[in-house]
Image (cartoon, rainbow, N blue to C red):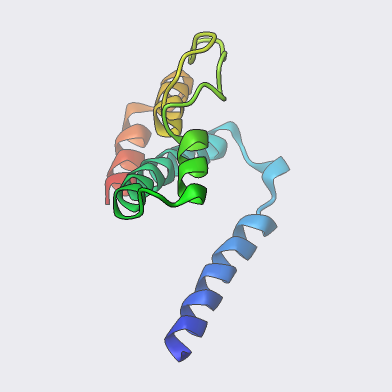
Amino acid sequence: MLMQTSAHLAYQREIDDICRLNWTRLSQADLAKVAWAYYYFSVQFRENLEVARSLFPDDERLLQLDHGERDTDNLSPWPGVALPGEKMNHDEFMRRTLALATVTKETQRYLETLGQA
């Protein structure tokens, strides 16, 4: 029980840190870094959802989540990213969006290394 409480508190602290972030004062470069972090989170989320669906194929809530997160057109159209009615996973949407962002190659390599780790 102690480990669950400790893990829960760590998880809650992360959420609290995100909520306390002064989003209005982030620079464009900082926002790009946040978007890169979200992209890698999106990849992990999709991969885990795929595993969960394979383990529990009849779970209705996982199916609903799957329809909203994978192979969906709920983010289209988006200029330069998604055509009207185009279906894709959210991580693909983020990958395409990041291609529009201006970051140095060095910063991009750094963020890719962090994300892949």
